[in-house]
Image (cartoon, rainbow, N blue to C red; front, side):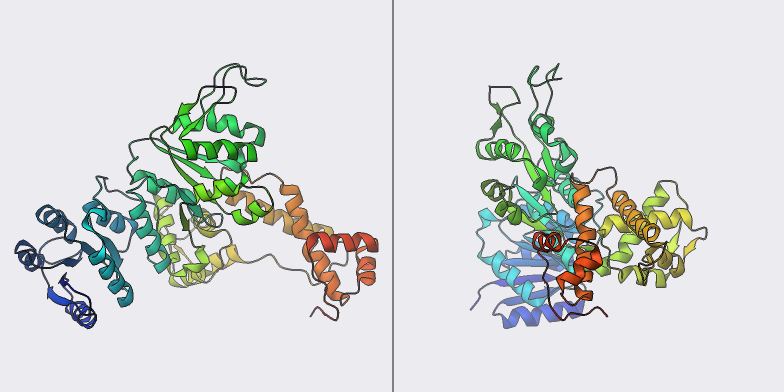
Length: 481
């Protein structure tokens, strides 16, 4: 059976009762109080093996109490509970020396697991307090998915571990990287962000590692690379999957040996930089295709951190929308708010462009809508999909299809912000059009490739090759409704 006395401070009697019963059934001795003063008396008397405290207590803030407890009894683990479920709460808990942070409402099984882990972890291996300053961070959300992200960030700020951030475009990968830097041990150093997809492949090595004078045509002076710029700080490598293999080999050496050479240089240069990488691609698939080094993948993937797409955290959308409305107002745009029905519509949209798409939409609504309250009709008009033609016959076919593609591409470029999309856009766009076209025609002809080829105006052998190249599955008898 578990062994230990747990001291609980929370001004909500119902929470005290629930914790008393749950931890009592788990075999622990439990003492509860509704004040910081009551908790401090027990701690000062040397009682208890673990403290669980709320942040908001009637007589003292729990965060202010933690340093006093740590000073008197540095080996006493402290778990913080809070209904103020923001990233700053999680980071402040880590700064003050808390063992862990649990957002309210919490899962009792998770709480019990945290208690067991805290009591079984040697004191010397518990997280040390940070010296970071508090401030505002642009990471918004109270969903369970975001709470877990906050907790991981709070732990990682106390390390120099290499982090791999994975997530769809627009989920906020660079914001997380900045949070790891701004609240970490290297916050007084420089944060340097590099988008691999935006740099011509032949210039990537020079961009990262610098070059010597005369190293290549046009190198009239010595060039400083991003590693040198980020010395003592953090280097964020966005879209790492687009890094050329030659540059991957150089990066692997940095991670293995802590040194690099400039392009055209011969003398190794020692470096002290924390690496944070990010990708929206499947690196394991790139490894299978021979486009990404497997040994580099394992060096970068020390701590994997997956950011959920916005469609998986719909409960965060109202808070995000209000945040972007305030941000627009701070930038000099008119103060606006969304009515309840508009917020509800936003919550149920799929958001293929994720948080970036939501921010762009809010900004567009603020500029285009004249009233102080943005109604659901204005939001619906912006989210409405282009009307789909029921027929491709007639003179309007090229114009309607072209307009649809133009709208799609215009939105795609707008969602990229100031960055250009990865190279190869022409082939990707053609593939996106070709695949559904062939699939629909094959379905319409019930898998008859001869009839499908006639319908498309293609040679039968050409159609077969395209089916094979695109990996299409031909199912005979399939009919389009």
